[in-house]
Image (cartoon, rainbow, N blue to C red; front, side, top):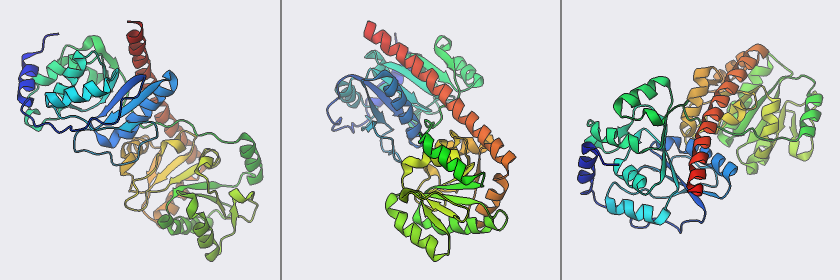
Length: 405
């Protein structure tokens, strides 16, 4: 494919960029290599989980992830994805990167495009997929007001997934890509349903006998006092309510037990084999691997790591996927898009302190309201799963064609 004049001019310009990639990274792993490029580092976890779903279904797939140079990933990524340095738009950098990694497929999560890197990958027959496409722009600031390189870059993708009908129409007006456009929803930070022990679920449900339950999930030690103060306020209106606390780290459990005892709470320990009785006010579960059980038991969950600064929040889709309405604090920068989508759908509600948490618990604990929020959360999670399935099917077809050809 001949390059457009706009793309050719851009490539001539960026040849003068200084190289930055001194070491391409560790040795390339054997097997199929899928390259994940996240132009918005805040969404890297969403892209990583998509790659892991593909790897789980395909088998023998290795994953690397890049972000724009100088833009590190803020939060943690799931295991199984290697973060490597991205090249600049300098052709020497790009050649070093592609010679070393030799990716088979690239999943590019916009909106910022890097035409020189995309063009070089295309010419090496890397299968390219542009995800969540809406209004693509050039990463290079000096070229952002010039649309011509974008017009020449979009046709280099094997498939473009516009996250709405309107987005697909805009992209097709910008470049002749209608033949590779796919209508898709937005890529969401999804989470598979966490497992639980069926016998424990049955026994615990019977022991609770219909008692109201709420969960404080993955709580940081500095959030404990806020959680307990809100629970005390809630008990004035619903005295039978049970609070389940899962600390963010199991090592914090002894301190949590002591804090509850000092405040006069009737405490039980799930890990010691305690089953809550009518007198139990707080149940502590140390192991985060039990969250699948607690999200199924609790109609309402406060997701910890969000009421204090510096933690960045925890994944809310784990709760939403299992029918638990979500409460959260303002500190959720690592999962901001996920919380925003749930909040817009009516599946999540923000709180700021013990008083607002108690008020939210009082409101959300009403069975009809909890069910309404849970259903909204399930719809958001289901939408994300459908989008991921669509992307994975396209990539599987591309990989099958490469192996056959």
